[in-house]
Structure formats: C-alpha cells, structure tokens
Length: 258
Image (cartoon, rainbow, N blue to C red; front, top):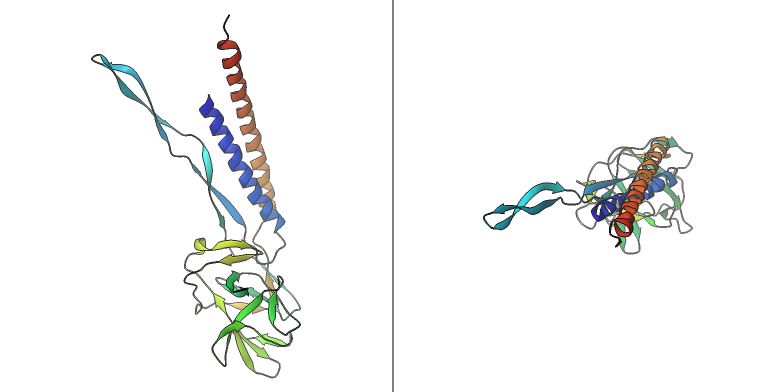
C-alpha cells in the first residue's frame, strides 16, 4: 500500500515539473529566438520482489516473484533547436540565423551564445543585445575577437557575415559559433546558452539582416499538452486518495482491537 502511495506521488511531482516546463514555453512564445523546452522522464530502477514461502529441506528459500517499478522521475529538461519562422523588420540591427549556429555575446568576462538577433546600438556606438550585453565580432584589421563597434545603425551585412558601413568599409565580422552536440549547451536565462569548451567559431552560419527568428513554440500544441497534464494529474490525485483511504481502513478498522 505504501509503495503504491509513493508511486502515485512521484507521478504528481513529475507532472508538476512538466507543467512548469510547458507554462514556461507558453510565457516565452513571443520571445525572439527562444527554443522550447521538453521534459524527459525515466522510471526508477526496478526492484526484485521475493518471498520466502518455499521450503528446501527445513529452510525457507527465496522465491522470485518478479520486478516492481517504484514510479517515475524527471530525467532532464532539453531545448529543442528546430528552426523558428522569420519575420521581417525595418531595423538594420536585427538579425536572424537560418539553420545552425549562434551569435556570441559577452556578459562580464563570460562568453554566452544566443539565437536572438534583436540587437541595438548603445550610446557609445557598440552593438548590444536587448539585455545590454555586447555582441562580439572579429576585428578585420587586428584579427581580435572583441565587442563590435559600429558607431550607428547605418551598415549592411554581406554573405560572409561582414558588417559593411555606408562608406564601404568592413571593420567587423559577426563572431558566430556552432557546436557538435547542442545537448551539451547549458541554459542560463535571458535566452542565453553556455558551453565552456569547444565552440566551433569557423563554421558556416547563415545570417540574414533585418529579420528576426521567432520562437519555435506552437502555442496550440502547448495548450493541448497542458490539458493532458492536468488530466493525468487529476488521475494521480485520485490514486493518492484511494491509497490514503486504504491505509486509514487498515489502521483504524482491520487493525482495531475488539
């Protein structure tokens, strides 16, 4: 009986985490470049159930009855990096990545990666994200990887991801990055990802100007999933109530001294 209660409660805890994941997707449906998250589950390790009713000579011996599963738990929360759709803007500081790859930004001394190309020019003339973090590029004169200085929003992007000023000069190339395994990326909030080792900076990344990649969240699918989670939660709640009633009867009625 207690095992059944634990199994049902583990299901409730997992469903609660699944609900939080789905509601977070819905909350970010309008955030450019956002990639939806999916919660994966796994069962606890099965245990072997035995009894010692069988006799061998004058000794009780173990009799294997089979495996017992003790419930489900959260395995991982993974981002799904499918392509979002594009929307055209009138801003030269908006960029969208078509296919694989990430923009590289600098927050303090840390390099982070994002799919959101909604940039702007700050008062000092640097290209920054909506969070105020500097967008990194390769200085075409010195070869240094540093924050991109554009001066104003009067520039264009060529097929090599090089920023061309109105005078025709090309000072910086966007520092884009790619990774062999996106599952190794760690989500750190603000639509950023982090990976300490082995970014591929020389990979071909197709960047488009004056467009933004929207989130890849389908709100209809997420709402349907939310309803399914609610129904599963209600079913597990009923099982918990049934187990609780059974335990009460066992304690108060069957075990009562008369």
